[in-house]
Length: 509
Image 1 (tube, helix red, strand yellow):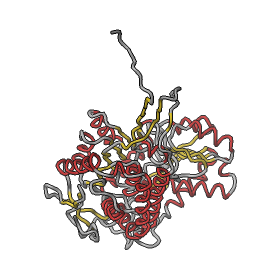
Image 2 (image 1 turned 135 degrees about the vertical axis):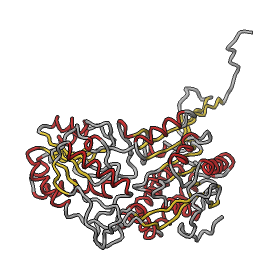
Image 3 (image 1 turned 90 degrees about the vertical axis):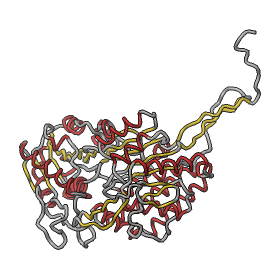
Image 4 (image 1 turned 180 degrees about the vertical axis):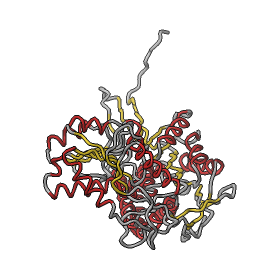
């Protein structure tokens, strides 16, 4: 086994962890990890493939079928999760910095992510430790004992995205471990570094050998093999719609459990009465900026569709554009930077294509829409793009229909409550949305009519570990966080015991 004091950088070429060993790819292939702020490599990882995936799944299978973890008392599993949370707090600074360099976000965003990861481990530790051992079912006879109990699913495959690498991993790993499962995780090949580091923390916390396994590599080989593998009992995927559809199709062959979180096109509905006071106006503008431009808009729940009442549209959009143009872009590790680069050149090119199509279809550019001028904080080689506000948009535009995953905010207007709801629901996605109003009755009505898995009222982006995170439409299947997040990693078993068995005599003779 590798020295536990090694850092991922020192362990270059050996970022596959299977059966307690850090390994290079069986093919010897590697991949450079680039800092999106300057496009320079800062780490090297193993580029695993199907053979490496099979090795990791076999280790997870052995650990589940013959190992101690599935049978470890709940209190001990919970204690281990709390130790992991403590280690995350201890390593908050280096992990936050690593997340910033890996994903391009600011260091402060990276630190907040690590705090949320620690919270997730603590939450699932408390949740599983506080549960009743089973639910008794009344069979109507004193001679029958009937109980529904929960057991781990088995080997869980986890495929995570590049935008929130460690946070998304924790939403899968923490409940899976709490429930007694083993797992193989495939982080994004673009941003794998903090997930690799987490495997070391799990080992340090005392997780038995073979329970936690990781394969670094591309989705077309590692992810595809995990989805179809006959020894995998559950696959949990967070990412794009096209890839998620392929995961579901591959998993269907072996009828394994599937959880999918596939993104969104999220409306931020602002009524005029929310802006009647200066404080209300300023708050709604500020939150519209946060909704659209946190992490350069590379957030599945980003509020990229501003749907605003016509009577306040011009004032609101003018102030929004003025402030968006002042957002300080730069390397996430620099002081004073408010927004970092996009994660890759491919993602920036995709964003540029969406903006170009919007302008061709009649949108009005209020700010942004281009690469910024280079500066000491913004190297010319970095993947930077200015926060962009596109006014006078409509539903037929590609930029309004499809998920951009970049710093682009579109503006649509409405006159009536019914029109606002219709616009907000006119999407094939249904992940999240928000409504801003000073009218409590309207807030409840509109929130109740929005077909989105999470609805915020007079706020945007907060989530609670104890709440469930899911979606309608093409935003996915299943739930993360909350009790339902734990339930995803369990099977229910009905145990029926006849305390006084007698002959049944179903047949004559």
